[in-house]
Image 1 (cartoon, rainbow, N blue to C red):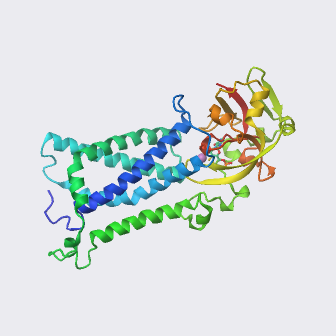
Image 2: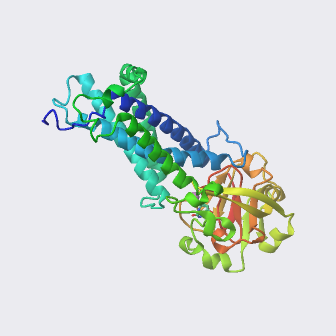
Image 3: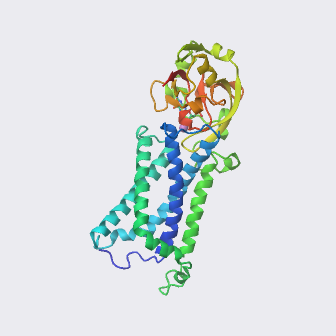
Length: 378
Ligand SMILES: Nc1nc2c(c(=O)[nH]1)N[C@H]1C(S)=C(S)[C@@H](COP(=O)(O)O)O[C@H]1N2
Ligand SMILES: [Mo]
């Protein structure tokens, strides 16, 4: 179909592809495992209860999830570039097995591309398909893992052989002269790709690591310029709760054997606690605040709620993905889990969840319900 010299670069080679693949394999594995953890936080299963300690755990794992995902973009791009001429090989298949192998590679490429694109759109806060994102991003992650494993199994001998070959030096002295004059060497390309992956990471971790705050070029939600130092994810107006939150007749309804409704004054009259805890968003940004308020467990105890119960915080917000969240017992009973009334010593701002918001250690921001109006017992 194409002439032999349609893709002249000699930089493409098993040597390069195997090294890119190894780096991509590590990044994808770490990204998958941290993503799985994030999924388990949001969809808890009884047989694998997650701990509420350390408080910074989710901040770290989700930061790593986003960083490895972003680093995969240049790795994936260069890897695709280095193998795409095979797309045009003719005849397209030599045998049934070869055809299946090519199909699996196509699936791997499509699924990986989907994950990277949806992940980046999510970071950019383009929830064009807000209900679809978590479901699709999670489901397709399994397709990636399955097709990576298949790909590894099929290519294992080729990979081992290519990784063993140490020195690509003969390429730099390719008799065709291509590499010598003007074209870049494989080694240079590999270094450039590593550099790009590092650059992408450094320009985004600024949204989580304050010392890197200057570098948050690609980070849409740098906390530096927000009141209280905590970015606002969804404003009260966007959530349609501003009027109800400020109405003045606020009551927190708590279920249990002795159900009770607490006014703001009731909550302020209970023992007050201050904790330093991060909001760690699934999007990879995180920021620490000093939160003040009442312990959730104190309120649950007042209502006679079983210490082993999972509870659910429900927002004034009537719909929206994050209008409610489950709080498994390890979190509900943790001494640092608050129904927060204050941030940084001041009354909670409307956008941070006034009058009352949940703040708990070691879990995704999506589960830190703002404008809590009810606590249900599951
Ligand atoms: N009711 C409600 N609570 C919510 C949300 C929301 O959309 N509605 N967004 C969540 C998300 S995704 C995050 S990251 C945190 C952010 O809290 P902040 O806006 O105070 O920083 O709030 C969480 N609580
Ligand atoms: Mo979030």
